[in-house]
Amino acid sequence: MSLAALIAASALSACGGSSSAGDDTNPSGGTQPAATTAAGGFDKVAATRTAKAALLTLDDLPDGWTAEPSDASDADDEAVNSQLADCLGVDADFFAGSGPDKVEVKSDDFSSPNDGASGGVSQSVNVETTERMTNDFSVINSPKLTGCLETVYGAFLKQKFAEDPQTKGAEVGDVTATRSNIPTYGDESTGIAIKVPFSIGTTDAEVDLDMIFVRVGNVGAQLVFENTFKPFDTETAAGITSKAAAKLSQAAA
Image (cartoon, rainbow, N blue to C red; front, side):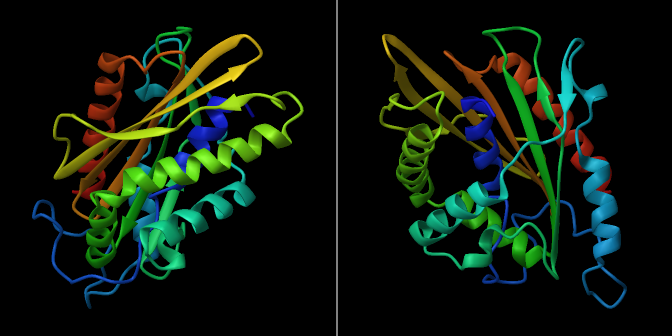
């Protein structure tokens, strides 16, 4: 897995779960919850169907893009997520991909043909009870999140560089995570930009990640745009995010 893909995969798993605390109100108003039974319980079969319907496919991407199955490491996910949970002060099951009141599905990894302008994008879609979705966005909007991402990713990437024969001896600089100024998508949305500077020999480079979180009712999506040397093209990212938000709205209806 390339460095950019490794970081994107771990970023996609981060913030993708939810804790079990919170109230039972619809988060920030908007579309009412989908995938509930007549008795008010959580219907996982319907939720899975909704989540899959909201996933981006290759047909949703610009011409020339390619797709391949997601190449995420469960071991890496568990290590990063455990440390993030400790830093954020949330339950260990915050990052669980599925549970009695939540389902999660992941898209393929999509790659752009335009080297240097737009690298790639991955997506996960969650359908949850209203309570869990409220908790998701409470943590995503927490002022602690950016600092935790900087601390955990910095340590994680230094370890991965040391373990990989291709990058052994490389140096990872200070990872930075900042809130992004993005348009409003769906009922609620927010963004975080992560920059990972590194050097190999005399070559200095940087991996840029833009994490976008969008919610429509109790259907949520996380998109991770990644590129090397400079940030992902903003116009392309906005178009893909708009398409993702539209699919969330259609699936949640």
